[in-house]
Image (cartoon, rainbow, N blue to C red):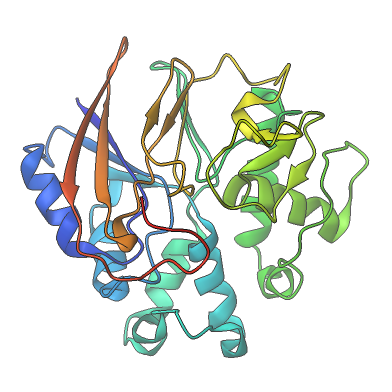
Length: 281
């Protein structure tokens, strides 16, 4: 069985179909891993969500920040923003089924046999594999409980910035959410800085990508992630970055995850949005 990890779709179905054709995707033998952010900003959020859901056991998709934003907007439409392309999902006849399926997606997938770990944004520098799996399970359990609407009222915010076993309540769940779905930069002590969104710069010595934090406790894992379009494609022995800016007119990238190497394939994407905070790559 071949495993292909695919970067952020953000409602861009046509590039996904072209990419699957390019890799000769065989639904009977291959498995697709999606880095999250299936929806939003692109033109086909509804059909993209339906397509991935219909793959059933043939696909694993972790939750991204745009996926959680959709779930929050379903509870409170006032959360919708001008650039959001989520209205068709919320008005669809099968909206309840789609949102129920999405809410049940994991925050993290770890394949012990192949030694690959899939997340949307990253892992806290203070987390071991055991702690990360427990944190993911904690938030997943709450999202699948009857109390989940209360979480979406308190999900948004940039604090706390550091993990502690003593974190509790909404602060604990918010930190877990921000790590799995939003983080890019940390300071050298491993504290989150969620305000920085651009490319890593050697001049910003105080802040580094989360995977470059010294003595990161999960450094031996091979982590596959998306979320960071200005970082783009990157393959190292222990990290694989796959958000190559499809919605911004970049590429949609698939990584075939082999035991000893990663093979990348790409398709060019039509520009849907023009960046306002940073120039396109």
